[in-house]
Length: 545
Image (cartoon, rainbow, N blue to C red):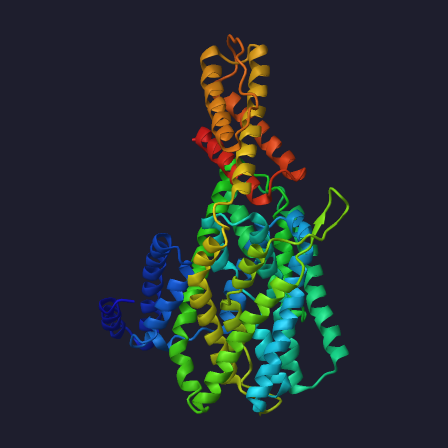
């Protein structure tokens, strides 16, 4: 944050009372940083969350802005449900099943391995934490935040399998880590056995998932009659909280409940026209971007509050614990992805593919373990006291968590693009070929239907010629990517009949059907299908206008 901007903000804040001025200044800062961060990210290739966190750290030294407190309740209730729900909406269950083993191993096995590694190091470094307090620290820093990494993956064209595994792991490990966190906090007040903790974990995680699946099925039936885009948007905003809040009140995992609801509803049709789909999609894209940006800036602002909290603890002890914890989360994750086979279920062969994945992809997955808002929110929610006694090392846990977030976001986030280029994982040809195949198949389907309409004299020569030229051009463009000799369009004589706009709508419908068939048959990934379907929806919206 430039000095001039900080000075300007510092002069603006005193014009209001301390609370109003701080929050107005923070709002102005976040809006400014969001725009600047996106611009810098595009120019430098560094994930935009890195700029947001660094700007937040710098802004914490602006008078009164540093007094803003990130309330964990606000994160858990205001930010987390919609973010997790949207992640479930845009995720394909079929691809999750196809990569179930690596996702499951990362979301469960890696979270447990990280938690226990950090627990052991924390107890050895700061015995006053105790096993329960150290376990809480391990659970807090265990979950990853894939937002920054996947933004780099998408821009550089990393293979879809890597992105799917990372996103799938990030979807599930939040709920797993938070379930472990709640068990650790409870153990501080009332020590429990390993078996008791295991039963609590099954109840929290399994119960939350079951609740979310049931709610998703119910909402899909209730929203079916709605044909109004605004009403569908309102329902989509309410559903994440309807999943999270009751599950949390029942002692279940609200995160997994919201995720499961999103996975169910993401596969159910909305009953809207294509322009309605586009409006809802764009609304959620903007909302998610705003929520994520606000969280990352607020994370940076917390450093100013944390420094005095750990002032009474010996600096060497604080630095040692923070350094060992950062090293543990990075090293354990790298070793995990390099040593654990990344298996994949092959439904076409009815067995697991035990060949694993290339080392480059494993290194990319290992280096993409950035931490974010979930970890800090969990750390801030550590109670000050339990059963009338002060929680052991709470301030140290919060500060160490912030150090892990800052080190992974800035350290790993800024070096991730260079690492991907070094291992030759940019410019994903496989996805480009899938996209070109999808475009070609859609265009061929449209041409076949166009020929049928022309044979029945239901379209004029002039309209048919324009449409045929458009789809033949798309086939040629796809052919340059695929280096394919597939057939192009076929001329057909026509005379008169259907309006051109009606014909175009039918052609677009036929292309959507072909796209769905390709996805069901496993020829293209869910992300490719969504991208091409969005292009078709935009064409349909153009016709409606």
